[in-house]
Length: 307
Image (cartoon, rainbow, N blue to C red):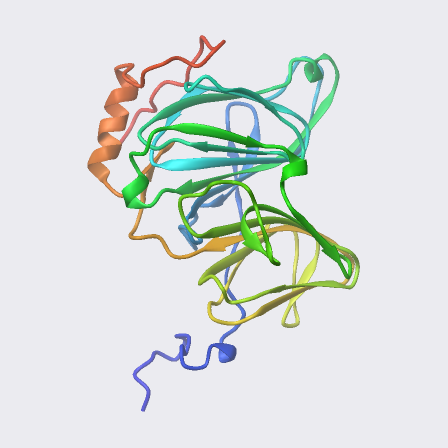
């Protein structure tokens, strides 16, 4: 007789498990007048591979003279991954970077031992109504790299490989998929891709990585006879091929990787394997010990009150 609970996956026969292990529905969060959809972390799922945070911004149209104004704030123990579909954001950070990011580009900022950055709408776009639509994810760093030196990398859309065929178009943002590898330097084994499916097209995800998920942005998809709508993160069962079809077309991102080397604590903008390290970061920000200022920034977000 099996000792497995009746609802536990049978690792001996992964094909017998439902292909979708968990469905996460985002919650709306206000970031000082700008609403986002917070996907990860959630009650249902804390992380997928090394991805510990996923926010969807927009699509939204800002009136003239308004826009995104995320004041200078700190990070430790993670890499921020910013990718836009519409609009332009100006990134500034304490290692001296000043970088516009436009649709299809990738900003990869490794916080490591500590970095400060701001994100604001392009001043030129503010002259008239303008759109913003994109994703920001955080990648938790492996323990041996949590205190690595902070750094910033920008990769233009033309440098990110694409795969096209049979109604599928995929831009490989980070890691490897479909035999293509992004030039982005990551510190862990992961993948992240922007995928568009024409009506009737399909996407096959192999079992190369243990943890995999898809976040549906537009259209609808079908997995093993079950339909899913936009605004859902589908976390897939491990050790089996997953086939996603789009009867009427869809836009989604797929992401994942190998499980982290232990749990991560998240408090505000800090991620660490150590609660004590987060307490130190809180004290450092409160006492202005994060070092070099952000070019052109005179405002900052104070440390939130509370535990």
